[in-house]
Length: 544
Ligand code: B12
Ligand code: SF4
Image (cartoon, rainbow, N blue to C red):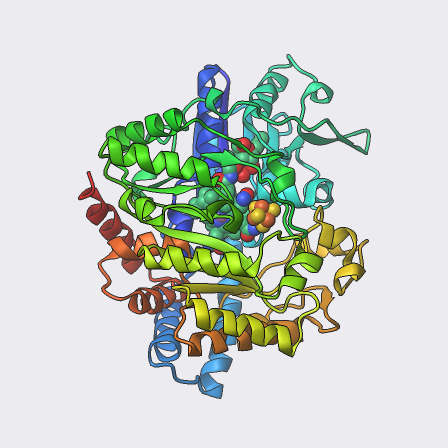
């Protein structure tokens, strides 16, 4: 029997989202199981990772430091700041020991279980570097082992990944369900890589990219598997399942990679999603759900809500929506069906920027209407912004602030613009007031790692300019904007799924949930994080 393992490593966890089971890998596993292949998912994104990297001394210092900064909101002293730098170096050293341990652990599994292939889901950040190290090691120790890669980092950087990981037999871009099954045939010498769609591989030193193929009918995919014998340490994860209700997007925002990944919008049938929910509730006791789609289709959502109400299914869920598709929706009905929070990509309140710089295809009056209706129905309203946007100036900044004063979303997430290869922003940077060196840019950004213990303006410089500002300047502008938004009494860090976690965490106020979680993650308090995951799981059971 052919045997494979799928691995996901994000790095040091930064939010409860990291503890949600990975629907992408569960979907790949179900396709392989259908072909009688033995597969196991090793998702290392667990709170226990802190035990491996943070010593008690590190935890204690970071606990005192973060309590002072995030809870008491006091400024750290120069001495504390110097100590923080030392601790950060210590953590970097410990990460190296951890990778060594992980390498050996995975190699032992490969040997003991006689594994034929390994598939890495690749994320940005620490996890990317760690996967490269592990993959390299496995290939040296066992050259006949087939190693594949896929996931968000491949969709963004494609062949650039070979610059740091030429041990991969093949990389899979786009949707992976059909491709992984074909790859399993390649492992058995029954397929040539050239004949498998969605692949990037090297032959005689030359990069080959096979044609892109989209999955036509999402209903034809088997139900993703989260059984304990397939999904390693699933019991330690938060009980939320991500429902892959739709893929693709009818829009084509200039900064977004998503439409390319899954093509034109397609959706599962309501019938199929309801079947999945009933199955997950019964088999795994899960009552919390998040739709995976970057913008769940509005008409799909209404029909779904009606079915949930008609069939009296008790669940709580969250999704992301596009303003244009939600203009006429009955938000009260959505709320009654258990929809607790919606994420909206607003980006900026200035219509000219929305059009000229982003191709966002939304109007201000509609944004206002939708945010207002969403909030008044009691749905936790999360609006996301890019600041400073291309062509941003004092006037446009003021316009977004006024918009926020007027609409008062429950949470406003603010990020500086990220430029990813494959997007329109990357293809024509000058047109959008960006400056970057195209030839070297992908490699630098692909290997970029944030310094999570420090504010963004202290991170290593990202190699581009926005409106003439270098990284330090625009990261500082983002920080200042966030502070101004907080002064309006608007939260700046709760996402839609965070809201669900908050609801079942036992915390009374979102502010406390936020502050304390910041401390737990910052100081690697795995004990508290474990308690929190257990609380969410226990409290959400009541929705049965
Ligand atoms: C839903 C969602 C989540 C869910 C589900 C995770 C998931 N499946 O990726 C949750 C809430 C858990 C989540 C969490 C996080 N997410 Co998220 N998430 C998304 C979102 C909106 C959709 C992902 C999705 O479900 N797609 C559908 C499934 C089926 O696709 P998939 O998971 O990518 O897997 C397919 C292919 O990639 C491929 N594939 C994947 N791996 C492999 C491996 C092999 C060998 C092969 C052959 C194929 C293959 O086949 C799969 C099936 O088709 C995307 C944005 C977007 N619209 O794409 C962001 C996104 C993927 N998330 C992102 C991030 C950063 C995170 C977090 C790290 C958040 C954080 N703490 O900062 C965590 C980490 C998750 C973890 N596992 O620990 C980034 C990734 C950026 C990057 N380059 O790393 C994205 C792109 C958003 C963004 N633009 O910032 N996320
Ligand atoms: S609407 Fe959202 S998912 Fe669609 S292209 Fe724009 S940013 Fe991407």
